[in-house]
Amino acid sequence: MDLIRSSGPISRVELVNATGLTQPTISNIVRRLIDDGVVRETGDTVATRGKPRAMLIINSRAAYGVGIHVGADTLTCVVTDTRGGTVGRQLVAAAEDGRPESVAARLATLYHDVTHGLGLPPQSVAGMAVVGPGPVDVARGRFLALPGLQRPAGLDLAHALTGRLGVPVLVDSDAAAATVGEFWGRQVSRERTFGCLYMNSGIGSGVVLDGALHRGASSNAGKLGHIAVVRDGEQCHCGNRGCLEQYAAPRVLVARARTIRGLADRLRIRAEDPDARAFDVLARAAIYGDEQARALIDESAAMLAEGAVALANLWDIDTLVLAGPGFAVAGSIYVTEIRRRLAQRAFARDVHDVRVDLSSNPRDSAAIGGAALVLQGSVAPGHGPQVGARL
Image (cartoon, rainbow, N blue to C red; front, side, top):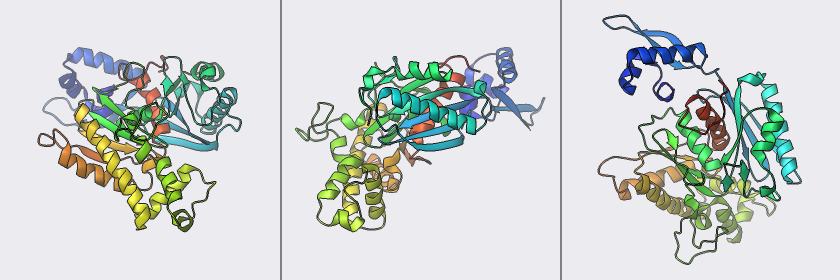
């Protein structure tokens, strides 16, 4: 399944060559996948000296995944088909009182509204993933900390939502989800070492090795924002000092912009504006040539480029994608600086280049990734979380 996803259209003969399995084995597997509706023949053939080869692709309508990203004051719900294409999206306000029970009810209502609005049969939904900044307890399906959520450890969110919705529910970090979403949607081969830098209120990362997300001991790997970049620097909520987040994250840049005389007033950044909106204004000003705004964004990009070099050197990655709302406006500035820094400082730069791209949908990348987590676990067993046999 993962080969068909990343290489399709692909023939049975090519699957034999890629897997080392015998022709009869591949034929039996493909026949079952076609009978189950997971794979289909495209109708196209490749001419050979013998019988023309029929081409195989994943059936985009075999199943749908639902991903909900929990932000500071909003919930973003995205539904994707089996090949990663977005078929629906809805943005709503988060639960006002922040109680875990209210959050669960709000998530359940959003799920029903979106799936019913799209007319999706219940049996066609492989599951739902709820993603947020973490840290997360993936095994128990709960967030240990979440913006605006009171007593987050008091509710096993996955268990509560599974009972309400009747579909498998996963809880994961937004950076991990975005990584899988970019890997899945871009049809990246499992032969590649794929990395993702995610920036929203904080900074995270993820790496896909052999087609599977590297999770670590507790599924909290990739916290790039919490590597120390300044000795004895600013105190971070994680307990460390001098963390990358304390110097490069959007909320930090917004706070600094408010202290620069005249900058906030000139850009019309109000005191009551959420950090996300204020950062978009700051980033847009940097793009359009405001020197003070550009200096702040450039400093953030330089710090984040150092993190990208560390990530590339640790994992010897060959592809890096920037995802998350933090890159939605000024992503080009970050991409340019990270490309330049990797070309100069990546340890393996004389052996291979590191391709650096911007997500095609930075704002929704975590929600799209949540849906991809569900689909990967459903249709490519062994490469993603186990979500139950839905197909």
